[in-house]
Length: 156
Image 1 (spheres, rainbow, N blue to C red):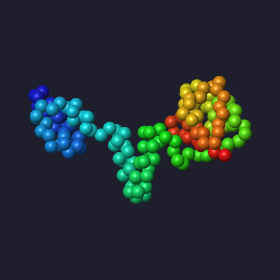
Image 2 (cartoon, rainbow, N blue to C red):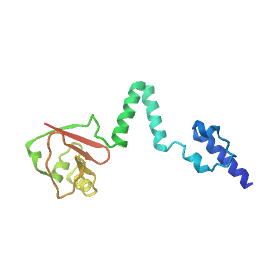
Image 3 (cartoon, rainbow, N blue to C red):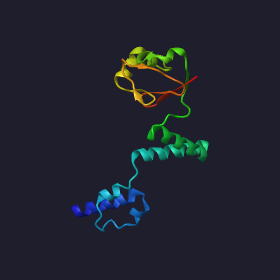
Image 4 (cartoon, one colour):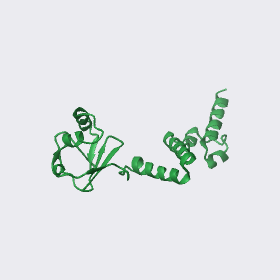
């Protein structure tokens, strides 16, 4: 009975895999289940496919392709998004404390939230993590990342 359950499980893995080379292989040829699992799509890939299909359905194939590329640049390759909000460069930003900088960003609820983000290491300026006691010197073209998804560009 155990052998039968194992065979059924391997057959299910072949069916779920979706890769042409796995579907053509005979599950009784001695391949282990782990080899089929390596071809399965990850939840992240499935989520990206779903998102792409939804965007294509409502806004077209080209918009779906653009959205997928932007998602990959921002969240897989960790690049600054092109549509990040722009902060004007003012003279006070030449030398400012990290706490004052973060507390003054749009969408920041309070100085306490800014402190929490700084102590957790969730704020970077031009790729350098900020700490509470740091002083920051911003220039034209600097970028600020707060948390995982909020980006800001500094321009004069």
